[in-house]
Length: 79
Image 1 (cartoon, helix red, strand yellow):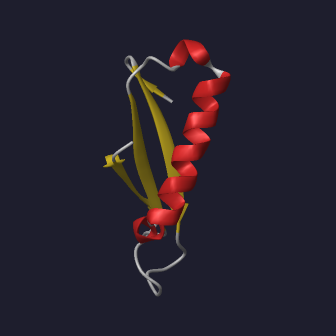
Image 2 (cartoon, rainbow, N blue to C red):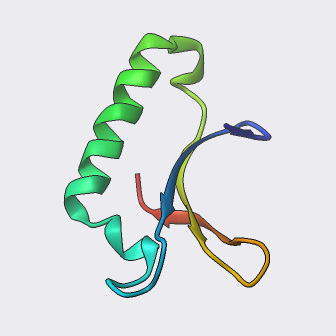
Image 3 (cartoon, rainbow, N blue to C red):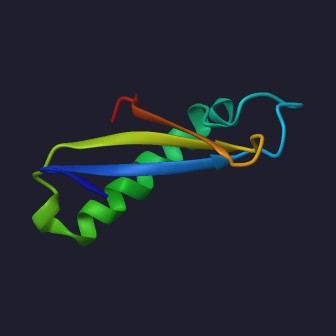
């Protein structure tokens, strides 16, 4: 997505319950590395965006009473 001039790579995580933890906890070092590689590939395929600032955000979704709980974590980790 774009946020002004910034290219934002967004990882969306869903958990049906907190039985095994918060959905954001599933974005560990291995997942972050995969996201970095995917972002690098995207930027290589879209060279006009390669010079733009980039960031990684995480959006978590959990069931709520009536409607889902959505939390947005901008700058979730360094690129």
